[in-house]
Image (cartoon, rainbow, N blue to C red; front, top):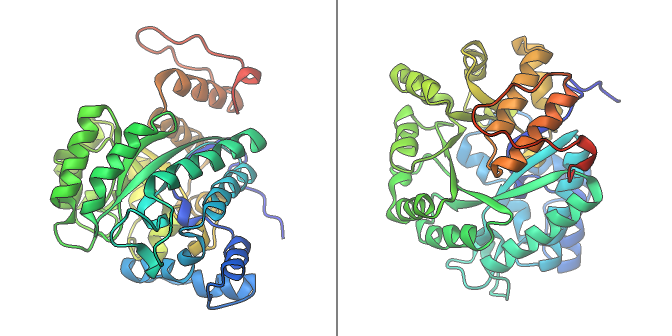
Length: 372
């Protein structure tokens, strides 16, 4: 049954994982084509096994990837296809700009140790993965009119991969706009593993933008480490920042961007429904944040799921949706001229006058001239 979208205007999404946004049909196709067993052979059955309807712990949620990632990893055709289909998915959701993230090492099967998902050694390197994803998203941009940039993830449990991640960010910076630290936050001290620290130091030196998953299920101290040691410019989730009022006030003053994923936070147990969600505090304090899907395959969701949740259960109204999308555009990792174009598109679509910015303003292009 068709449901009227909670916010039927152009949207910006900054926190979504490519490997958590794959069509079930595509998983079934490559499972069959490559002879890789799956726990189900229909879309509905597969969604019921991979998907979540009630909260699990973050490690239990992460275990869901074990079911289906072997069907995609190490296959050039599959890697490019999931990137292309991702753009199609976002176009249907009314997204005009998205930053999609993934770990190149988790999709590779050559020149990576250890090889993920118990794959046999093949010939797809992490570098190959990045090139394939970029091909897929660029073809998607052309066909579906969504502007897409990518973010490469370091994985908390594999700090030895991180130095290569930052080098790939530098090599492919025409499309890769940032580095991220993802994975199991419950691994003690993982933000400060040497490989991650060195990679983020190199990112700062090289002008590579930085975001970090922190404070999703971990403490405010993890957020502090992300900000002070990893020099992050945005926070993935960041809900537990509120446990440290002084830190939260500091981040408000610094205009730190919080990549909020409401439906995800319920299903991963990051938010307990009997408590007030952090995003309500962010809204009331006029904080800088966005709404995002995180892993829509596993959460059986679309971006509208998150907008409906905040509208129906948390009293969000259209003006707040406009504000948070403008914040998302301003906090995107696009170059300044492309950021101005994106903002102009949003202001026009929202019927708002663009504020006069300080300094030299890039002459805005007409909407018809934009590349999306």
